[in-house]
Structures are given as structure tokens and as C-alpha cells.
Length: 237
Length: 217
Image (cartoon, rainbow over all chains, first blue to last red; front, side, top):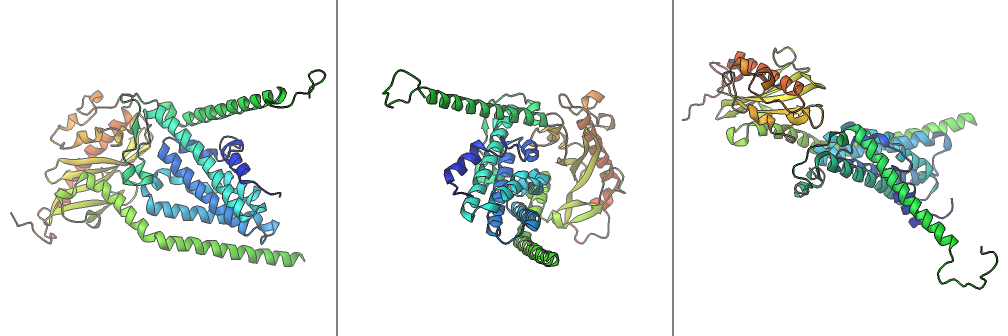
């Protein structure tokens, strides 16, 4: 593969090819745990860690394994990484571990991870692979966090509740109550809310992309400012 | 040719399996103690909410009575423990695990703290899957409904009062949810009756097994 630029990688992971809202991968945890920011962020960060570990190790061994055993090896690495992260979370963020429950081991089956391992890390050197894992993970975590914030806010009228589960006791008072006397909006917290808000986020992203595209088109068709305008008649290309 | 590639690949896979297993085993060994400590802490936290440290001086986690599905009134699905809180050797309260099997979405796991005088020290829901926003008010984080049981006993209210207001009892139901509180109230009543029936074993009353009699004033 040709030289990869870190700028392109960042743009791809965070926006253009975002795993959650463009590739629509890993929707199961995305929809299931985004009822609050702390849950969403917890799973997002865990997924990022796994992505970094799996991408880096897959890149390290990419010339060692033959095609025939490529996938089993990758899955083994991913599963090992997930198990280690799970043990670590159990040791250091026990309550969050309990909340996320089954969705932690399920990170293994998150297609983002195998997708990046096979699609990127297996063909690139270790630096870019590490970075790709980091950025793709962050892209995924960002969407999760935004979704969690939207659902928590519209569901309960407050955001950042219970952040101490993830960031230690000092984060206990991070909770921001937007509307003090808020009637909980159940739909936002239940699974349908996850679908609706994911749809809205994708719609907003498409809207922004459209705007950007239109602007670029407009720039292309109209003469660029400061460009030389020698001919004013005839076909302007 | 084929044989060679099979051998090569199997060896490769075996090596990777060994490496990843070693990695996991290593992490397990490193985190094992922390995890055990965290688990204990989480368990104890729930217990201490019901019977605070100021009321007892023993380690409740190590002072237990085994109970299981055979115990009438508790509706347990598996073997659990009753935790005993003592001060100066005398039982001040017991924390009894119970299951309300008729919640809106399945079992609600409860712990009920019962004082020596038969009143309730506190009730907590350990695990529940009730509807968010409606039935999940049994969770103390969502609502302080659970605190309304504190100080109640079999005499307060009398048997007919042990129901939600809709059923002419004294306990509030939640707006939009009657099934959950009904299940919880009924389960707590059964636990109190269990404690009454087994009062002597639970509170070491008139039992020679007592290793130290609380004789200081």
C-alpha cells in the first residue's frame, strides 16, 4: 500500500469513514449501552484500547502469518486483548464493569475491530496501524459519547451523571442538571431512542457533508478569488 | 507440500494460542487480588447501606448463615447467605436475601435488613430489570421509595396494611407502575414472616451455640 498520511487517517477515522455512523459497524453495543454518557464513554474507551492493541499486534505479525491462518490468529489476538481489558476494568472500575456486563466480552465480535485488523493493520507498518486503531477507536467513542449525552439529556434532563464510576471520586459532582424539574422522557432511554438518535446523528452528518460538497462545487464553478482572469469570453473551464 | 503447509500453520497457530493464553494468564494473576477485593467491597457496600458501620463491629461478610431455594418465603433461586451484624457478640440485625419473583420483568433481587426487635433496618434492590423510568424506582438511585420500609414491622402496619395503596395497603405505588411495588411489598412481608419464624436461629436467642454472651451493659 502506498504511503499513508496521518492527516488522512485522522479525517477518515473521525469523520469520513467513521466506524459508527458511516460504516455502521458495531451497532449492537452502540445501541445498547448509550443510555448515559458514562456507560457510552466506558465502552468507547474499552473498544479504543482493544483496537489499539489488536491493530498494533496484527501489524507486528503481519509478515509472519500465512493467509490460511490469518483470520483465526487475528481473532485470537482480539479475544485475548478483550479478555485482558475486561480483567483490568474489573480490577479498577468494578461498578462500570458490572453495568456494561455482557457488552465488554462482546467487543470481540465488534466488526470494527476485525475490520481494521484485516483491512488496515494487516497491510501497514506498525506506526500507522497504531494510529489507525487510536483514531478509529476515538471516532467510535465520540459517536457513543454524543449519543449517550443526547439520550441522557433528553431522557433524564441531566448529563454526566455518575462519572465517578469511570474517573474516580473527584468526578462525582460532574453531573450537570439542565432542567431541574424534568419529566423523564422514557423513549430516549429505551432502545428505540438509540435508533432514533443514531438516525438523527447520521442525518446531521450527511447534512454537513452536503453543505461542504455544495460549497466545494460552488468554489469549483465560480472563478477562484485571486486567479488570473485573462479570458472573459468563450468557454470557461 | 500440502502436508508441510498444514504443519507450519498448525505450529504457528499453536504458538499464537500459547502466547495469548500466557498473556491472559498473566493479566489474570496481576489483577486477581484487586478483583476479589473489589467484589467484596461492592458486596459490603450494599450491606453497609442497610446496617451502617456504627451499628455493628463484626465483618458481616464473614458471619453468615446459609440459605437456599428450600427456605419458604425467600423464593431464592440459588444458595445465598444471610449476613449477621453483631455488636459485642450480640446479633443486632440480619440481612436476608430474597427474590420477588413476580416483578414486571422477572425477578427482583432484594436484601432486607431485619433488626433484633423485628423492625426493618433497610431494603435494597440488588438486581432488577424493571422498566426504566417506571418500575426502576425500586433502585435507590432513582427514587427513595425503598426507604419507606425503614422501621416497619409485622405489627406496623398490621397484615392487611402490607400492600400498596391501590390494594388498600399503606405503601405508595409509583405513578404508572403497580406490579413492581406490589411484588416488592409482598416479598418483604414474606421475609419478615421468615425472620419471625426463624427468630431463634437468626438472632441466637436462647441458643447454646452462642460463643459470647453480650454481658456488658
